[in-house]
Structures are given as structure tokens and as C-alpha cells.
Image (tube, rainbow, N blue to C red):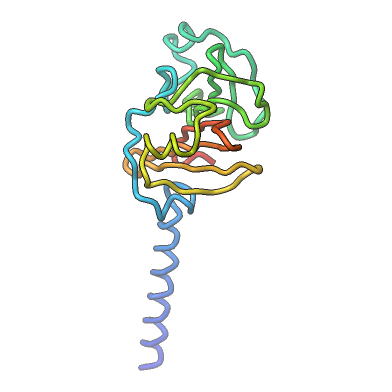
Length: 179
């Protein structure tokens, strides 16, 4: 009987650890877990916010039809006349809802944009410029040969990333659950 109780106790502890580790990975990528939250609640690009819908009459009246559409199996990526790129939900009740805003493009560096973040960071700024405006609570990672620094707003579930090739070449504002 004592062995069974020990086994059950060990099983419950292991089960609890598995459940807690699962919760640990919810709401965003792993690399955002160990950085303090930064308030990004006012972050917009050219008066476009995450979760705006590209199918609303107000949006289409302001931006018209997209200039380009990129093929992607998970999201509809569109390039708009103001130089902004959006990723929106493909289907379902949230079809057209924006989950990513992009300024610049590391794969097409000739695509220049005068758009900037709410704090004034734009393409060509330095890492030091970003840190001076957004603060010291950032994460760092590398992808596609670019150094990336980013900030996470855990309360509002937003991530902003600055892709650097010496200077800022791309800025992404994402819903934290964007795949």
C-alpha cells in the first residue's frame, strides 16, 4: 500500500510539472518568457492597429486595394500603398483580422518606408536608438542572418521586434500568439 501511495504521489508531481510546463509555453514564444514586460498598448503603424480588420469599409476606404498579396498557407499577407505589410487571418469568424504589421522587408531591402513606430523608430535607426526609446527590457535572438531585439507586452499580448543588419531593416508588430 505504501508503494502505491508513493507511486501515486510521484505520478501527481510529474503530471503537475507537465501541465505547468505546458502553461509556460502558452501565450508566446519561449524567448519572451524571461524578459520583463514593456507597455506596447499604444503601438500602431500609420494609424493601423493589431486586430483591425482589412475587410471593414473604413479600412478599404483609407487604403484601397492591396498592391500585392504574398502566398502563405497560414495568413494572408498584403502590401498596402503606404508601404505597410499586414498579415491577416485567412478564414473563419475573424477573417481579415490583422495579427502582424510589418515595416520594411529583409528579403527585399529596396522596399523602403517612411513609416515609424509610435516612439519614432524607423528603418535605418540603430540598436542604441531603439533601446533609448523602448528601454532595457528586451530579448535578443537571431533569425535569417539578422540580429533581432524585441519587446513583449505580456498584459496586452503584443510583441514588437526590430530586425537589424547593422541598422533597422524590418520592424514587426505581432499578436503574441502569431505562429
